[in-house]
Image (cartoon, rainbow, N blue to C red; front, side, top):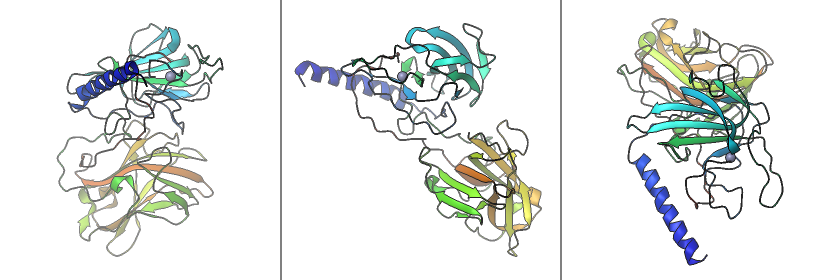
Length: 372
Ligand SMILES: [Zn+2]
């Protein structure tokens, strides 16, 4: 490394630290979920370089989505679309300001087409987290590398900008989240009784028919994965202290599901003080999905079960029963589970943590790059 390069790296580090401190000096709540469903790992992250010797870091995340994959809004906002040079067809979502007045926006580039309702250079339209905003493709480019070889052009180039500056959303405790609980602000009457501590399965066991579990999904590394098959699979909570009654309790959880068969129901079973599991409560989706249906779209949804529906009984334990269909395979990834008081309100004591921790192999260049 010569002196010029060393000075450059130092300047860049200062710029990076300054930018990070601007954002980190103020509290910025996580607000982004992944802009697609499925297990696609980024193959070029924020500080990656496609061109060896390039002065510009990537400033975005590339995800190798197959052509035509649904691209999803990472958070609620106002969406517009345009075609812009190397970015190709892109959707831009303005998420408004955070609590400290920082502007927030995300960009989804190289799309093949836009979702209906989103038109190029059209009026901004309201979109909600998880809504399809377009379909991945290879618009823009160029895709030829410095060595003359082509790289795979089909990917999503995903940009997060705070105050107009591209930032790395994977910085710990920063912008990524796994479907944060959308709690009402009603005051909790009792504290959280259990959760997946640190997103692990500690204290939880599999119900019968459950096949395999692992503490961490390989993609969502702070979650708990359960693969199940059979007529009565489920997961069982740790035993609770005796004497709690159901008359003011709510069980909530966030999970994403994929499996064979149609969307299905999910039930909570309650074991009472007599040891009987005979009390059943159906879960309700609370984030826009229809009624009691558990979606198998492999996106996080939040569910709630009003345990008072089981009657006023003394409870010992819960089981979340996934499906009642025989020979049905399902894969659930739980993000969090909590038991709280206060009916539809509840305790927001559980704080979601980041979706992924990524290691940056490089740190050089400026933060100005916006191209692919
Ligand atoms: Zn890119």
